[in-house]
Image (tube, rainbow, N blue to C red):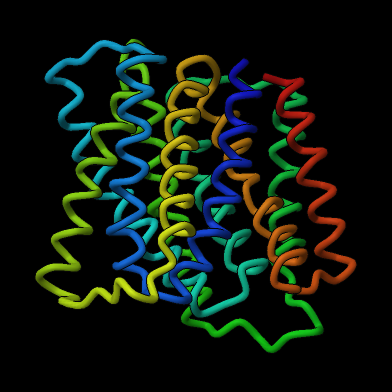
Length: 278
């Protein structure tokens, strides 16, 4: 169950990144997040109240603040990178860092994945490296996009770690409360820093879809981490570039070369090994 939840979370994140990246290219990162965050917060709150009950406690306040602040920084950096570089390049680079940090934390906390799980982790690392190879059909991804992708990956890894070590009886409340914290942060940024919001040409549907998908992915990841090893579910969750790369190829014709295609296949193989090994 943990592996399945993490895989669904990964798929949801991959689609959310693609949709959110498209929206940010049209309207700007802060404006998109100011819409996508509250949309996702409403949906995940409904889940927390009606479908996936959990225990609320004062202990969750610290986790919520941490995930809210770190999550805002992580997604803002990711969207900024997606605006400046190829989605098929930025997303896998981010995934390497976002998967590595929770794995290190999980092993440090005494988790012992099986041999199959370690093999799956190795496959996943190779997969995201291969998918990150530049396509010969496009120009080089700017160094600033690479730097933003790496920074985003570190922040996402810290965010996933915070979700993973939250109390196991909390349901999806940490992800839910954290999303509301992020909502307040991004609306404040738009009102007091950006000070502009063009409602006429705004990609409302894309922004709302990205927010809902991202929030659902966060909740599913928290549930997965409660049912399995953080070191395993984190790597499964970091396989989201496969979905982003495929969508970028099909929808906006970002070309994949042969090496990148092999990387996507390896990512699927990694998912199977991790699922079996968990």
